[in-house]
Every structure is written in structure tokens, then in C-alpha cells.
Length: 635
Image (cartoon, rainbow, N blue to C red; front, top):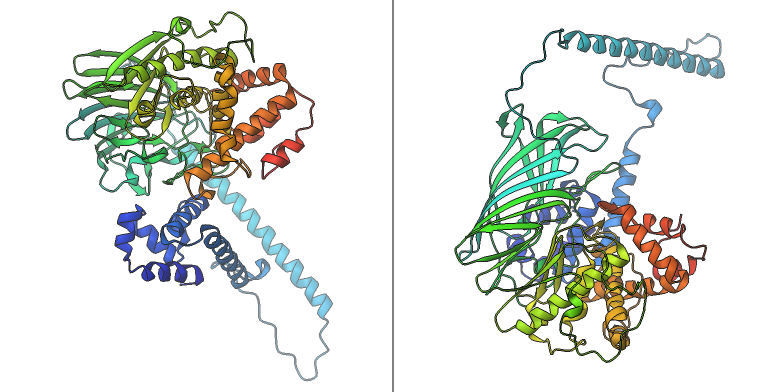
């Protein structure tokens, strides 16, 4: 054990805690805690994993995370140096099958003196000849194996086309999730059968698949009952290994590019309780007194990065530690009688059976309650809704065309809320309908036939494809005015349908790409519909917090959600506002619409963002980058 491991162990023992106690309270698996204290960093799947767990463990023990990470870097550097020092020079290494170098003969008493330069040249020539001979033999072996493999392959002969025994499913471009869910509302329990149809869209032959299983961060929550892989029509149980919130599945046969594989899973979810003051990932999954909230609740394929492989994630209490590719969903939910469900996509239901279909969605989420009330509104008719009590008159602003109708099409907004919150439920509905209309005009079409708002019991707002959770705290505080926190929160969350939903990003390493734009979109809502309150918005949402620092930070670099929001949301909104001023309104709006068009259904990066900006402005962006960013992103 080195200095780092000793320091972690000493801090734990100073608190009189056992490894098991820490594992129970911190939700870090015992094996990972032991690996950190013994400095066995090979137990983690990536550098990001290791640093994330170190930060979590250090924070839990009351240590300074940055100091611990610096010590980790020092430890890794020492380990790397020792490894290099222990390895002999490349020219001296010999494989086990290599002939030993001939011994240097002992010089006779009266022999002629040695000629070192000539002997050295001879040795070099000899080594080169040996190397050349080795290359020749290796080439012969490769050709031989190749011909043997070719001979062993069965070559089809001519003849009639065989009649298929069954009609195969079409090969999807995106991953497809088919889920059959049995929801026991009273017991806060789900039994799920899940099918994953995956096509290898990479250029690499895959030996395994990686799933991120975010419910597994809570002990006793996720129980895997069965896992099979379809191999030529036969269901085969593969080898698999869980690690934190990931599940690695070894494929029985390797999966070449453009080939398809199907996984069948069955599992049980026993939901944890959501605290009323919970935020972010702690608020998205579980049950409360009057509702069940299911966000990031099912095993999902990890994104594959061509240069780094599968993107395995780990739990972190700050921000949104999720990164997902778009996929198609077909989800059927059978509930306890009397329960109302709100989910992602097009909905049909009969009795207690609810069915949802969503194409190219970033995620599938649902909320359920046995007391929900529902209001609806078509987008485009929001102008007839009862107005909020604002303090100014409307006037033409950014992107306004004068029609007020946008291009949202046949879109219906649904508001699900608890009894006693009728006014707040209606206000959230009206705000969402107007926001959808505005953002459709500014950013492009909304991709689903419905958008749903669900009141759930926590202290935050959370966005998923086609669905947003809004915390009861904001409904309780609603006073009928435009300055109630429910209004800017709703506008912010609606804009995530474009920034996160359509244009995805890495919410772990570059969360500013969706949150800064979503926060500024809330301001644009006030600028369009409530211009008399836009200064109130800026004072309340931004200035009072005096945000500072750089916006392009990883979630692991924040101690808490307040610091995270100050930098990424509020400071991020200041950056977007300054960018707008630098570019001018016409170029700014054209850029945002093209950004959404060009990167829809992808995972955009900071470099993509700044590269595209240069197509719309010749302004010098370096002052903005130096003010708001740690790293230069302009190409």
C-alpha cells in the first residue's frame, strides 16, 4: 500500500468505519473501495471510472478531492516510471523461443588483440540477418494459415434459393428496445422482460457488448433474473460481468460491422424512496408518497467510441451522469388498476394496459400515480390560454415572425398534476405549449406527436425524450404570476427536447453543451412572451448567484450541485448571451437552427459547436473562449 491508499485507509479508520459500512452508506461497492485503498487501479474499467470513484470516496471521507486526485496522478506517474525502469531495453529483450547470443570466447594468452569496431559491425549484421529470416518465416506462416482457413470454409454451390422458414425482423439502423413491464404500484416494484436489437454500426468487430445499468447504483434495487443471446435462432446464456453500473456481456460469436444481435433480459426493480429535497440523479428514479418516477431505469447500450471503445459510466451525485445514443422504443406497461401512466412517445391504452412507441428517442421515461389529474392543449392554440400576470407588453424579439404559430404541427401537450394544484398544472401546460411553439420556430421541428409534463415529488426539474418531471415544490410555490419559479423551470426543461434530446452530448465531460443553451432558452421565453419580466429573470436566475469560473468542466470536478449549476447553467447562460451579442441576432439564430439540424440524433462535441459557429460569423471568438473556457475549442 502506497501513500494514497494509506491516506484513504487512515481517514476511514479515523472515522471508525469498516469497509462494509462505507459501502452501505456511500453506495460504492466493497470491491472498489478495497481496490482504491490497495491502489489496485486495474480493477476499474477506465481512467474516468477511477477518478470518479476516488473523488466520491474522498468527499465521503471529508478529504479534499483535488488533493487526492493530485496524489493519484503522482502515484500513477511513479508506477509508470518503475515499469519503464524494470523493462530491459528493446534491443536486449529475447523471446522464449529465440536462440541465445553466442558466448564471447576467452582470449588466448598470445592471441592477436581484439578489434572491437569490426566485431560490433559483424554482430549488427548478424542480428539483421536473423531478423530478416524471422520475417520471412512469419510471412510464410501467415500465408499458410490464410490458405488453410480458406480451404476450411464451406463454399455454397449453385442451386435454387432456399425458402425461408420465418420472416426475419428488419435490421434497424438504431438500437431497438422492446419492453414488457408489469408495475406493482403499491409495492413499488417492476418485473420487466426486455429485448435489445443491436446492429454493430462501428467499424470494429465486437467481442462483447456493454450496457449501462443505472438502477444498480442503489443496493438491492436491480435483480437480473435472466440473460440470453440469440445465436442462429437458439437462445444461449452468455458470460457476463457486472461492474458498478455497467454490465459487460461476452458474445458467443464475434459481431462484425453491420451485423445484428438480439439480447433477451428479464429483471426486477425494487424502487428506492425519493426524498422531497432530492435533485438530479437522486430524484429521477424511485417512488414518493403520490407517484413513481422512472428515469434512466433500464439497461441501456453504452455508446461506442471508435477511438476508446465502450463508454462505461459510473454513478455520481452531481449533475446528470448519463450519456446515451438514440434508439427506437416499444414499451408495454401493465399497471395496478386505477394508476395513470405518462410516458415517452405515442400512447395507446386500454384499462390498465399502456403502450408507447417512440422512434429515435434519446431515452424512455415514465411517471405513474393513482391520483393524477390531466389537462391537455394543442400547440398553436396557446395564445387563447389565460395569460400570466406579467409586468410588460409583448413586442417583436429574437426570431419572431409575427404569426405566433411556429411549425410544431399536430402536437398535443399533456399536463399531469396532483389534486389541489390545478392552477399550477394549467400554468405549466400553457408555458410548455408556448415554449414548444417558440423553440420549434427558433431551433426546428419537435420530433414526437405528444409532449408530457408530470408533477413528481422532488425539488428539481428533469427532462427526458418527450417527457419532463417537475417537482412538487414548484407547484406548491406557484402564485399565479410570471415570476413564479415554475414558469422559467418549465421553459428550461422544454428546451431540452432540442438540447439533449435531439442534439445529444456527453453530460459527464461537456454538460455545458445542453445546460447552457437550455438555461438561455428560458430567457428567450421571457424575452418573447414576458418582456416586462426579462430583467427579473436575469436578476433571479443569474445575477443573484454571481456565477464565476469556467463552464467546460466535468461533473466530477464539482463538490455539489450548487457549484455545478453556477458554472454550467448560469455562467453558461452568460456565455450564450455574450455569443449572441458578438454574432448578432440574425447569425445567432441561423447558427442555432443549423446546429440542431446538423447534429440531430448525434452526440455533439464542443469542437463541433465552435467549428459550426465559424460558418456564420467572422467575429473573433478568442476573448469569449478565454473568459468562459479552460481549453481552446476553436479549430
